[in-house]
Image 1 (cartoon, helix red, strand yellow):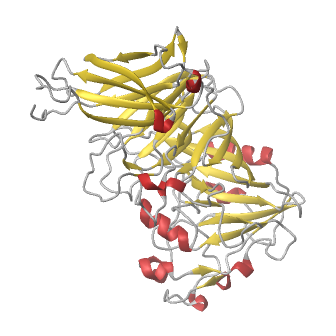
Image 2 (image 1 turned 180 degrees about the horizontal axis):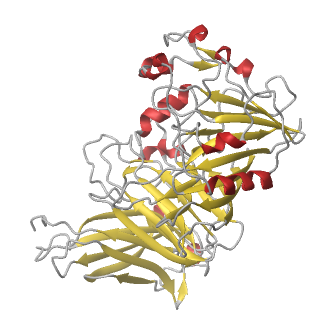
Image 3 (image 1 turned 90 degrees about the vertical axis):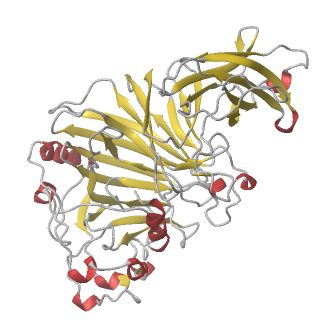
Length: 525
């Protein structure tokens, strides 16, 4: 995904791209803006179930030639008119505005409003848009062209959007920083596998008209893809930490090898732990710096992200996890020095299951990236039992968008991971080793006496651990744990590392996980 281009498009029109139309779903949807029918979530689930029993029909992306040929600057010139926003003339705290088709966004999505249980289609009208220098002429555009997606605005700021759905089943939101960053989507299928990933699409949305003073908006969506159909309900509550309650009902058309529930998508180019891309003037570039997991057994885990030379896939087995998320813990501008992208303001996204998800694993896919325009990180929940045709799979979860998750470990947390050449300064190195320095802060660390012995508990999948130490670090009012890892073989595969700190058998910190690949060509000693 060419992320920076999508973000720029989002600045003018909203956020990220690629939706749907012209498939089997259209047979069960109203065909005109004047035709009304009753609607509820149960009916939508029934529609999705029926859709899954039918043969998948790919969308029709045939657009007028003038729209097909829009270049970047022309597409950027198109502006939605706020006067035409849904509920702009109503006593509502919310407004919905729509994205135009063109450039990367060639698959129309149908839009509907629900009022008092009745549905009407929101018809495309060229008058909704100011075409500026795009070269498009509203008189020459078809009245049934359709929309690419939508964005939501809240009464606290009518000029900056808070939520945007655009592209397959992708969507994103902002917290109090009003800064977009990572995305999520309705579903991931076969992410990180050797074959091509499948991207289910939201083919239609329904907006439930909110009461005048309501601070919660309900949006429904129908999903379709070659492997699965689904019905979604989103309850969106804007705040400094924006909250979405998501209900998903999924109906597989065929067996699915790797189902990704609540998939999160982000970007990590480089940070203090890894600088494989070392030609940029900025110290760090990333939307998220780690995967956080609150396991079903109560253990808190922090896994710093990496930008590997080759695809990396990790699965962390669990039973009914309490939550997970891709976080941007480092919120210090000085660590990024980017006064345009403002990476220190990028939101974290936390997933909280609202029901027991049973056995499965939180899976992490890390892809190599050469620049910050690529989203190269994906994390999701994968159920242990593979979906089969005829099943109904129900998932309920809550998404929190903001500078930090709504929950935190009572233990000290990892605040930095650094790596580099091992050995003892001033002494000749006789063999290659790699150093890991992990900083912990918070929790009960302030209670430690200077003479208290803190034990680092370190486990590695192979190699030899040496030169371990734990010392007080006054600038962060915490501890720094360091150790060297000496490879004991020439295996080019990654090495898994695990560490936490304890005193008298009592854990002081969350568990730090890492995966390091020894260089095939070792640096000279």
